[in-house]
Image (cartoon, rainbow, N blue to C red):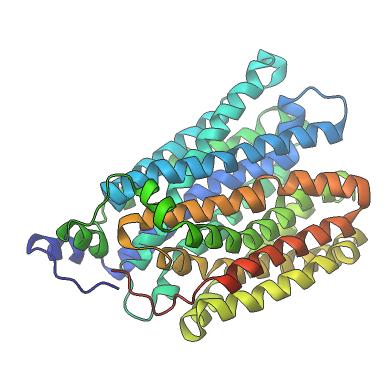
Length: 435
């Protein structure tokens, strides 16, 4: 971490950023943003198709829902360009507040969009616009949260501090899935499809208010303040990133592919497949996902600690090898339709998601200098989303229909191998200085 001097007024501002405040602010924002994102992912697997797309075929409805799911991943790099520009030009704090607002408003409004039966083709159009807004907001969120944590981290603990934004998705998913689980238990199918699925979207408004309160209390990071002192800000961070740091951006994106593929195939695709094909009751499958994501949360601090002790690359390589092998478990475990074996599959995939995801909170920021760090970390993270997540449930749905779960498992293994290439080609960043 940079030890460059800053102005007399700045230490007071920096002093406001106690470790507890930084940890909570970086964690709560990603938890809320990913809650918003997962609410849609769960709804896409359960109800978006029938409500917004009038296809007669259940498969066609599912595919249409997963297309709208993918729209946000296309929007996320745009959000990382947009918010990254202001994050590297104006500051981390104000940009994080803006990204949270965009995400929260988009999510809440989805809860008010009437279905196709009420307003016809305008319904899916509005849905796609708001889903795009979700992607824009989330595109600016993660990079800023990771920088908030890592640029304030003590020496030798960037992996540990960078872990807290990575815990946010686990908690966000647990909150989202837990709420859907409670609704599934308390409402009939008719009530759930009529209005119950909208409740998690509306709850977002309350969570965003909490997140804004926390984020408005933090100060700017010391590394960005030092960059202002040294007059190192660039006019167009994205132009500087692409012209001078293109390779780290690409390698960071490739490294992220395994995380996304593991997660969305274990959740969005498996939920849809388990309920519609294996005929596992929706509350049962949602309950299993709630259990499995706990293992993802447990893996996150273990992996972050190991990345500080042994380095980012060794931890990622071990996790990716396990992820490649895990693809071969999909057909025998998930395909069995037996609750214990399905649960075991979900636990394996989400545990490995935690293992591979945790080091990214430190690794991606460490790949870039301060003047393009917000943009670089965000673009790498979200380009990985396009490659590993935007089409993952759709591809998995098509592969399952034509070749069965063994083909989907092969897809997971290939995606993990792509990440292995990216990790092997990048430098070790554990000892990099965040100047």
